Image (cartoon, rainbow, N blue to C red; front, side, top):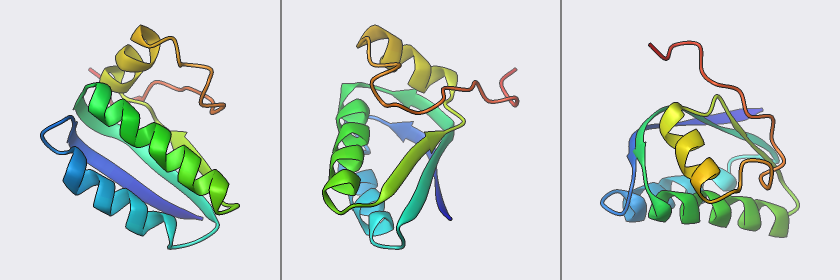
Length: 97
């Protein structure tokens, strides 16, 4: 299993750079997870990137899970009513404080 940890922001200001990282990561294996525990801020551009990652992984026949959702990620997923749409177990990171 390959893991990518996204750190800091997942916002319109970082989406282009993060998109390149995520798309490159998708080619690194077939069983993938993206750790979201270090995402301090997220907006709808970040949400679009997560949706893109899921779609591209599915298109390529790869397994992609999002794990350790930070509070910032959970807030956006709840706002967009997409918490269950990702099909991943949503677990709040234990290093929130």
